[in-house]
Length: 177
Image (tube, rainbow, N blue to C red; front, side):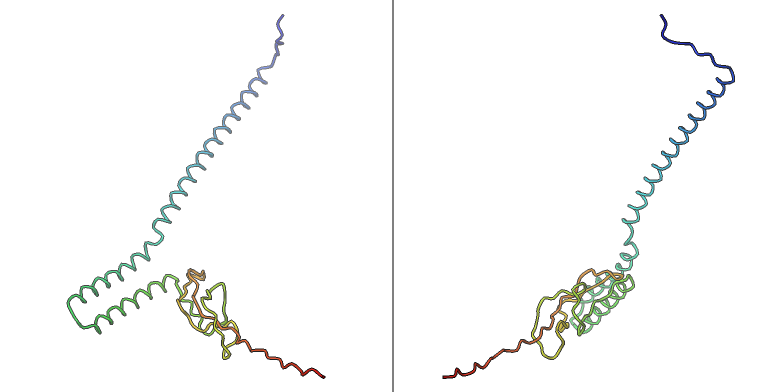
C-alpha cells in the first residue's frame, strides 16, 4: 500500500506557495549580497587601516629629512674647516630645528626640577638626604623625560630629596643607688 496521501490544493493556493517561495529566495539572495558587501567593506577597512599605519609618520619623517640634510651639510663643512666655533653653531642650529619639529609633532620635555616627585612621570634613580627642600622634591634631573600629546614616552630620571634623619640620642638617667 501507498503510505503517501495525496493532498489536493487549489490553483490559488499553489500560486500563493510559489510567491512565498520566490520571496524566500529573494530574501536569501539579498542576505548573501549584504553578507558579501559587509565582507568587502571589512577587507577594505583593514587595507585602509594598514595603509594608514604604514604612512602615519610620513609628515614627521618628511620634516626630519630637513634635519638629515642639515647634518650632512654640517659634516661636509666640518671636513673643510678647523673652526670648531662655526661647527658648534651649525650643530646648535640643527638641534634647534630638530627640537622644533618634535615640539610641533606634540613632543614635550618633562622638566620636574624643584617639583614634587611623581612616579607616573619621574623615575627616582637616587635619593639624597636634604634639609633644605621638602621630602620627595626633585633635586636634579639626571636624564630628561618626554611625553607625546600628554602620554609619557620616557619618564625623567631624577634625584629625589629625603628628610635628613636626626640621630636619636637618649640620655639614660642615672640609676639611683
